[in-house]
Image (cartoon, rainbow, N blue to C red):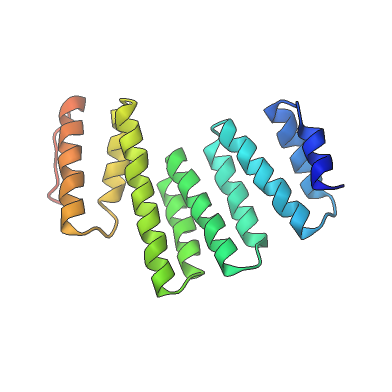
Length: 175
């Protein structure tokens, strides 16, 4: 079976049917290239359905079968980002660690900065959507990360505003 055959088969199907088909394809004895294709289609389908944990697990599987370090890093970063979207920060940290283990020192810093920026982006989106509790959780997680003083101060200021809107008391003595 070729990529175009799979695309035709998935064509007008619903998302759950696509997931079922792709999962069945992955159980067959297919080439590594086809497995990568199926996993990427599966991750895309999960993302469309906002099933972020499932998309993250799919990227984990994709990273495992990847051959090059750069490909592994890219997939582990995607896994980490989807776990962030799912609010599963511990699993995101594990994926981040896996990505950083694949890179050199320069790449490790770039990976860390990319994930840090993604946390900020997610938190800001939550703020725009007035999902203050979710934004608070993301910012609180960020305070556990390696941040410079300016970044730390900005996050604390944002948290104070969010806490006021949520009717909570800000307590940063431990952080």
